[in-house]
Length: 286
Length: 286
Image (tube, rainbow over all chains, first blue to last red; front, side):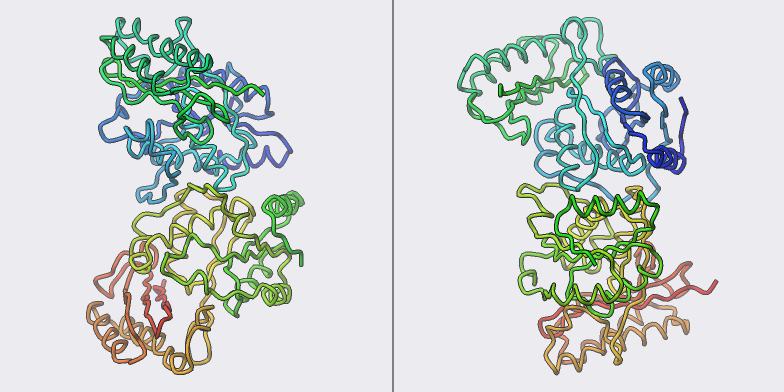
């Protein structure tokens, strides 16, 4: 595995491989890799001939009061894990390499960036789309891989790719979970033992909501109300940012279980001081 | 010359030429071609092996009270002129081909989009950068050509390319003028005979300001004041949006003729009902 830190070198590497006719995959991450990232990496390695992983904790997607400073980092370990997963190139630039002193350009997906997590993390998705587009321009890949755990991020990126005519396939991969159901996240490391023991309530409540939705409970409002009650009943949950039932493609709120397309049930809760998100996607039978 | 109207066909054409190792040039226009556009086309043809011209009146860069509806169009004539200039492919998509029903993604260059024309045409540069980025993603060219007449547009696009790590060279070409100095513009067609006779005052005042600046008048404020007086003295000039002396790269206002870099003196005036822009760039001797 080759380690790249400079944009020009990274761009040239991707270009050279592309000229050889090789299929190029891209796995953007913020590092501190866990099994979720590695499942993306392995899928990319399976589908593509050369795979880039990027490790960059993107300051533009953190709010001023968020955890940019304490976001977990361990590049040495990341390199070992990435190489084991079959990654060909790891691109881990310094902040100054990615953002010039006078960076002024941002990409923004209206509406989709303003709801759910966007309503609670102003500027977050603007930061995500901007850095992802930068990475897409540096590493001109055929396919880019994102986890379904960050469902709204996935929807925002897919919309950006569509609207800006970006010639890249976005591949989404299933959420990887602990045995007790907790979705893997670099932020799980923040949880105390007691908080960690209680965190699986998130997925449990999502699954219960899914069951009710599938079994035909016509009022998403009822499902939501019950879910919120259960989450509020857990003493470790300090706040619930949202618990939403939405169209999986447009992220419009759904008003009945009889929806034309796929549905996503998504939530963000704060356990102790840690903000965790999770979701279930209900695919319409064809 | 091949006429393309569909994004996929256009993308594939550019890709195929690129795979053959050919240098690709791109000349984005809103059509109603004049000698200014054609000078860009000829420069592109001189420098590149295959040249795309795009003709698309981009609704996203017009304000609700602006001239989108009456903006001059003559695609038949454009095709003849483009072919004569040596263009290989002309891409002239319908509006629905470029913007889906639910377009939500925009690119925005802060600060540079908010001053000068941006202060008087809210959303204008956001529309420009968005459509230009879309075209860059559809036609992955080596070089793209823009006229210096739209100086702020050029600065905004260069900044976007830098900030988003877009791998394309932006080539700027000199403004083409009528014999009496008026900068060529598709909007000149709106001018009545009397307005047309008076329009060269814009360039005359710019040149006088340039002379004063070069001769060492230390107070740009003084130069600006005199220029505004002269413009206001012309009865056909209904409004002056701005007359600015700025750093040619950053577009920061300059406070003294002793500036470190190049300088641009730019103005936008309304003659009758027609908004005209023009500028002179003063290059520092090396």
